[in-house]
Length: 120
Image (cartoon, rainbow, N blue to C red; front, side, top):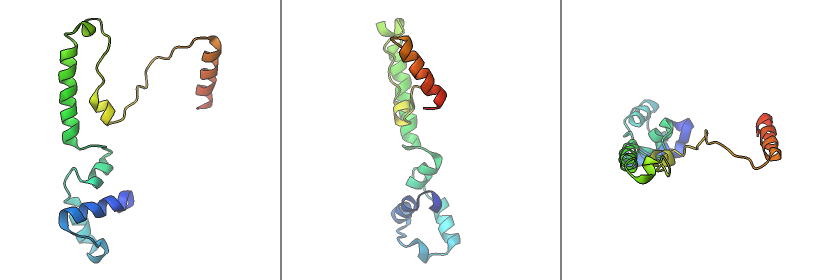
């Protein structure tokens, strides 16, 4: 945890246990206290790779499903257009990787193809 983000760990220990000097306690005690931190502490969220708490992600997922269920009964839903943006994707910063790309000319296509082959 120290190697991942020492500042986050210090903040969490200070907030939870009022422990401001982590070097003043034995290492085994520090390890026990660190493992006892809540799941939405800064350091544990960073270790799990979550930008927001698990509760927030679950609530966002519920909202996404409700929005989708409402959307599918609209005129747009019947024609499969204007699909609602998923809040969970925004929170997790997911990009549309498989979004099709269009080109206006052969030159644009060839330029993009060359970039992809070069790894740009």
